[in-house]
Length: 212
Ligand SMILES: *[C@@H]1O[C@H](CO)[C@@H](O)[C@H](O)[C@H]1NC(C)=O
Ligand SMILES: *[C@@H]1O[C@H](CO)[C@@H](O)[C@H](O)[C@H]1NC(C)=O
Ligand SMILES: *[C@@H]1O[C@H](CO)[C@@H](O)[C@H](O)[C@H]1NC(C)=O
Image (cartoon, rainbow, N blue to C red):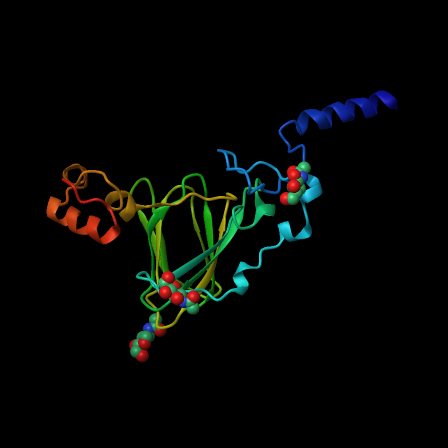
């Protein structure tokens, strides 16, 4: 009997060799995050509140140029989610609001519409576009790393939750990558096929330096 238990135990160890050795790794926000997330807070300093995020109680502020508010509950805001490979954010967008074209390197995203309607879509690496007007009760998935966008073309405020397969999703906004930095306008013009004057115009709009 004993050898069988030992064999099962060895089998269990070998099949779980990649499993976590801790139940969780609550983010220690006092130390900068590394490539795999925050380091773990000492167990004596962990409380139930590390596993609760109440930021969605606060009203969303959509008074901005994109008429949109995204409230993240990532490990920086929600320490208990650190290292779990998931996170959530709240979207609220007024009529005419947008979430500009962007991608999340290393994270897929699910959008669950809870109010109103949204045109939501993504562009595959083969440059195929998948988009649709979705409404309350609908869910769309944006596969990892692909460019995607949301437009509120409805008549009302729309609300949704985003669920990410990363506890600290990184975001790369296409318009900011093109125009919101100090990359010289003539180089941007060359690789984007845009006129340099237009590049300078968008750089001014998006806070990039407009040196040629
Ligand atoms: C726990 O938190 C206290 C107060 O912030 C801090 O002084 C202490 O070093 C922490 N303990 C550990 C083991 O990190
Ligand atoms: C909403 O955000 C705008 C722009 O940042 C700010 O001026 C305004 O005070 C905020 N409104 C509220 C209610 O917080
Ligand atoms: C928005 O309102 C207009 C005018 O009332 C109506 O024709 C249109 O169908 C509405 N659109 C949506 C998406 O509800």
